[in-house]
Image: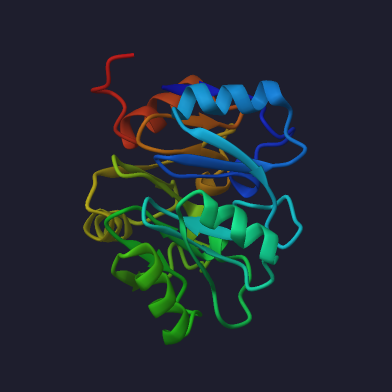
Length: 224
């Protein structure tokens, strides 16, 4: 299912929300009607929480079906809440706290910023149970903001080279394509929440953008 909805009041819904095929984690102040939209579209349980006391959950976490890597400033009560969901939880070592901005992952692989040191890479690999490749994308290290990936497909910034699209296909083990959302926004990872069941995109996304998201994330063959 694909929906174009104003969830958080701005296009950057992926900055505030993280989702796997099992659960979506949203800020405490998200309206219940918006929670219901996420629940219906992604077909997941929705948990209200924070990370390091912040509502920027999508920026401060990267997750898949195996676990979740979070900011080193995460609070003990937040870790316990995540563990109670059955998630394996680890903090990212080093000075980079916005792990969701610099890592994109599904259940088959991950691409991370080259700025992360080997210790951080090993934590991601162990927690998410995937191989991690490091690379810039379109000359940038904000990989998680430039790519939205699920276990069915990925959408990558429209500025990505064909070689970068091919690299993402190899790492994630799924097909994907370039695109934008929100009338030309190339930071698609920051402006989409998605899993294998559905996606929610920035409200201003055009019809052609929606069609590209639907195809890239592998929803065209689904019976809606």
